Length: 340
Image 1 (tube, rainbow, N blue to C red):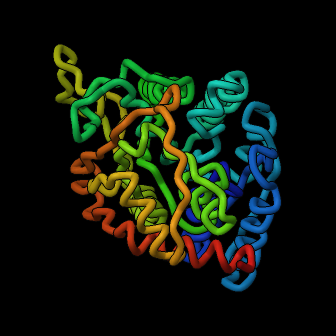
Image 2 (image 1 turned 180 degrees about the vertical axis):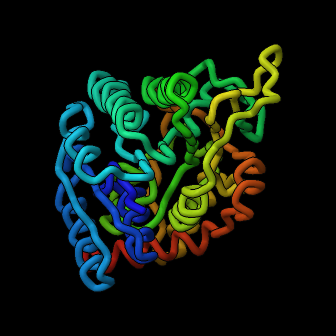
């Protein structure tokens, strides 16, 4: 088996590539190493992957390239013929999408289309790609289910992720490509991105600076620890979506299809108030936060909550890491990495 992981220098991509390497699976890592955040953090992740591969005598190839350049991907598909593609490369961030919409179109739409085209011309076993809980947008029916409508995104980032799901369906239908879209719910953990709340809050508290808390703290999130995300993807890799010959086109279920296509939520299924999350950070740091309460940010939502029954039935695994445990592990990593 050869697995191509796009976004391998990113937060989730790094952890997934490391899991694969540690299980003796050959990995091709692909990333553009852009400067959306500290490039040193990305390079340090790749260094760990290379060292792990050497120690375990597993093959890890890293390529710096851009998803929006078709030939960057084509070269890899032609030479290595990966069996499984896991696309975790994307321009992330709801708020950044308001200020820099073109970067989301280029990476999340043009880039994803290039992946689909490569999967079309170089047959694969399974394409797994990152979607997001943000696709639920204006929906307020909780918990969020894959069977719910996601036709009212409230940010361009969410709209690009919804578009990825639609694009994947068309390729599954036209070219019989097995595709699985994963709607991630607020992933956190060590080696996380500097623009994520946990990283921002931890850094600010340690620096005696105030943290910005939006919607005056009245936020609830389905915080999901990184290891639970990775284990779920790992178990899904060889469970390919199949055609549903009983699919009812009069009452179409958005989570499935007559094509080899499916959509799955990955969340902890235990929504936590933001203020409780902040309290766990304070406890782990043994230091109180200075808080600046602010209005809700454009493109954001007040509550997320995942129904993960479809995922659990498929892989017989349920994310269970508590916020208390996950935050503590992150804080230890943060202190160690920055020598604080």
